[in-house]
Image (cartoon, rainbow, N blue to C red; front, side, top):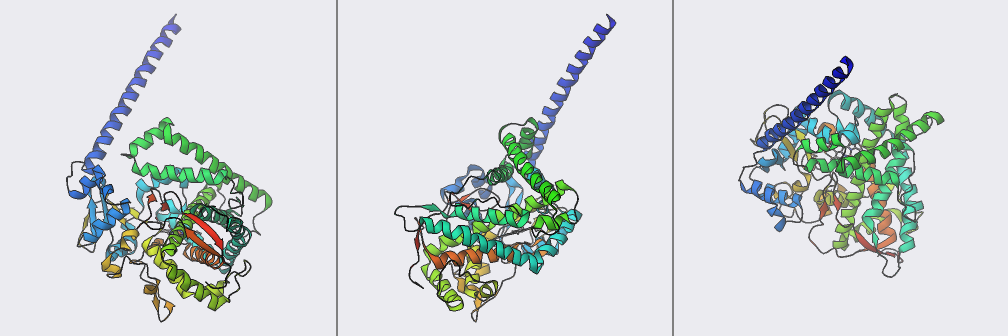
Length: 508
Ligand code: HEM
């Protein structure tokens, strides 16, 4: 009898605690949302905040980045403050240098960013600050800077062009009414390439049947859903959804499960087979890291870094070439001069030949000036600070530098800043780089992109072989700017629809 009573009171107590805990969680969440909202100043009625809150900017501009560019062009300092987002945005090179170099320690990626991408990237280089970042940076730069890694990457790219890209485009060339999404083809190319380079694994996304790759799809979904967390009204919303395992967070969990199991499978297989003689990045890291979860995180960061950036840059490059046939002709003329006029698929430019193509390099840089794959990049201010243009930055404020807007600033590039002019990068016919703080397309300072050289070789190789072998006609390239999808990397809404002809004549 006593034990029945005891069980009864235990249940009452448990229920009571349950209700109390639930009530406390709701109250706590409510208060946190309130504090969060109050910090964002939703009542701010300045023009920019009102326009942001009502989305009225979209009546005049195709993309949010075009509206920000407009605001930054009008600002005397090249800096704006969107109060409702607690976000300072700058296109001022002096501020950029200050944030990513001079006061690097005061502007880390910060916890809010790591939380957004934490489930996807874990402790990978993209998502960490401090010692963990330093360690990976040191290791990765040793590996990526070595001559053997570069030549390995070059071989992978050349092979993918010869055995997949060119045959695929040839198979649709000249077919009446056959339209191909070049953006999709380029994303498949860069996924195959970065997987081979990072894992030594070939997902074969660019096979002629354009197969559906489970890994590519799961990785895409995981990236999109992680990025979408950034636009939820408060971080508490996605955190609660994650806790309850519902909606987009449930989908994210499923996609991540697949990415993780495939990554773990590859790591296990490598351990069993022996990795010391293999050249891919994972095998190189495995020599000094035992922890499989850490290895998985490092490699996923590389997938993210190398996948969409290259495809995004090339998609906009071909979009611009369609509007500027004179630039395409100049690239052809330069390559004919250096490689001769034999345009067969086997005649790919060597690394040394590409180094001599200054106009090609200038055209690619100029294209990314107007259409950088990473349109903006944010840091979090650790302690109160003042930017070189006098802007006060309160601790905890998000500070964003905006390469997309910077490419459109007269104060940086002169009155012809909106024109696509590769010549601006040439001096006496030779490519002349600009300060990374005026052109932070690969970031700059201490966290400058580690894959820049590899990305440039990949882009130049693809651009050259497509321009030399095919006539690519873009359907409707007439609008002033492409429309972009929201995400970590710029991708064109609806893709880039093209029709392809094999180039028969030698140089025109
Ligand atoms: C056109 C192509 C590319 C562009 C425009 C680009 C741009 C960038 C940018 C803006 C960052 C800074 C991101 C941040 O800290 O928030 C970055 C970092 C990085 N990129 Fe790239 N990237 C490209 C291709 C690649 C490729 C192909 C690889 C790999 C092979 C790569 C590897 C990395 C790595 C490892 C970092 C992290 C560096 C660090 O945090 O210290 N990138 N890249």
